[in-house]
Image (cartoon, helix red, strand yellow):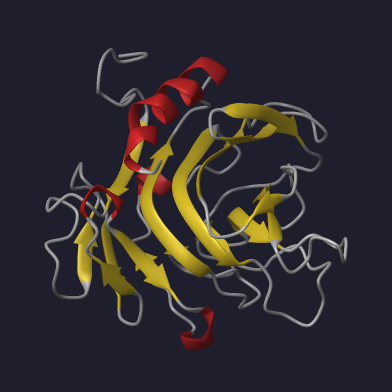
Length: 239
C-alpha cells in the first residue's frame, strides 16, 4: 500500500496496532485490549487507563511493576527478518535501577531480550532530567538518541534490517527525524527469555515510568519518509 495520503497511517506491513484512544483497542474497562486490526490480544492488571481524549494512554508506574503482555503470535516473531516498532510515549523517569549506565531500564515493547528501551544517560548533568531511546536485539543491539527531556510526548521508531551486517541496519528515529544506527545483531524471537511480547518491562525487570498511547509494529523496515509520514499523521494529538 505504501505511504498513505491524508489522515491515514501507513498500513503496508502493519502486524500490530494499539491506540488507546480507540474503543476498538480498549473500551475503557476490563483488563484486555486488542490491536486495532484485531490480531493480537493484550492483557494487563496494574497499568492504569488514562482517559484523555486523543491522548488516552496506559499509565505505567515502575513502583507497581506495571506490565502489559501480548499474545506471542507468528506475526510478532521476526527471527532475523526485518521489522519496525513505533510508539508515542511520555517518559516520567528513565532509570530506577542500581546503575545509571545500565542498558535495559524501562522497555516500551519487548519480545524476549529485544525491544525499544528508555534509559537514563550516564552524564550526571542530565541523569535526573533526561533520557535516551535505543533498540535492543538479543540485548546487544543499540541505536541511541540524543538526550531528551522527561515529561514530554515523543514519537519513537526503531527499525532493524535483518540481512545487514552486525554494525549496520538498526535505526532509531525521534519525532520523525534521526536514522541513528547502532552495532550488534541477533534474532527477534519470543520464548527463550520472556514468553510473550510486553509493554512496560525490560527482560532484566526494569519497568517503565510513564504513558504509552500508541504502538505500531511492522514486519518490514519503514523508510525515513514513511517514519516522517506517520509522525505527521498523529503529532497534532500530542502537541
